[in-house]
Image 1 (cartoon, rainbow, N blue to C red):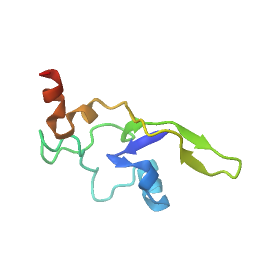
Image 2 (cartoon, helix red, strand yellow):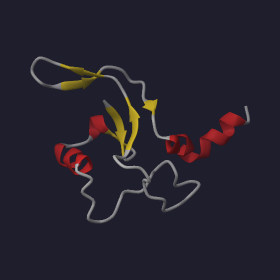
Image 3 (cartoon, rainbow, N blue to C red):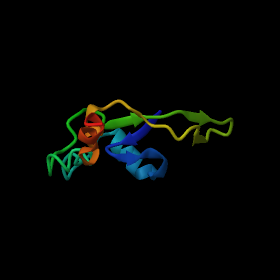
Image 4 (cartoon, rainbow, N blue to C red):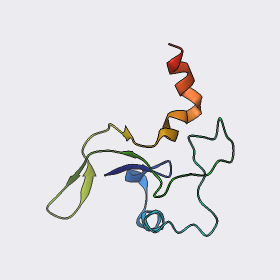
Length: 92
């Protein structure tokens, strides 16, 4: 399932925020991409759906969902720009 949505960990989001993200209901404008801010201040999320990472979830018989692992898997290339860390990794 979704790990980070518009730069926010899904596990910490309330139902109202999840609904807003699911319907892409942003009357104030699309959210900023938090991972591009160091390189491009003010840059909004530039992809439909806003999913940054995915992760494994576990579904239970009571219809609840929990995070099955702590590992996030990046699916948006902008995620690699977080605080421009990618450039340090390349230089190693």
